[in-house]
Image (cartoon, rainbow, N blue to C red; front, top):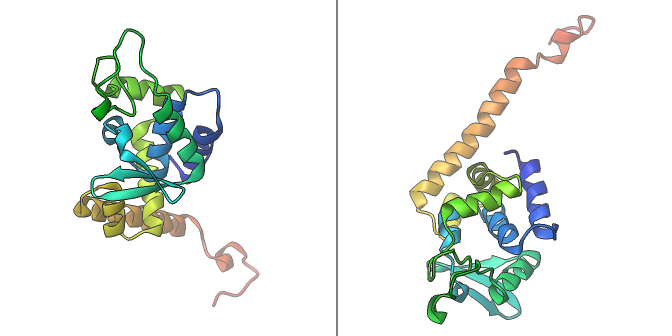
Length: 189
């Protein structure tokens, strides 16, 4: 997934009222922060916190700042979570942000994949694109702490992101001839 496609899909997750809030929220968390779907499905409502008028999502030892548009979706999901018909609400002390079809269980990976497919999104390419975008702005150790990723994993991602860029430049250099080679009337240097 290229960055333009990722940003377009993220904008639709934030604005497309025809899609269910749960799908939009889960998709935006993947597209914006590169969180894996396995981590997203295990989020609980008690991990959402408001402090000084800002919304945070507590991940492991770090609080992730949630931008205002995404915070609206997050609060909508917390205040009115989708609970499948025929299930009982889980215990209040452990309420899943994305409840599943079995009482007290989070949504299944298969169901979450269906949500993403309905929005035209594949979770893995979306997450990969988000991580590459984040690593353009953040050092690997900061990203690791921010999203609860092991620092060695973030470092590998950083090397992949750089390699993809350098591979592009090398391929581009091979296919583009210098100006003087294309214009025979210009003397070469």
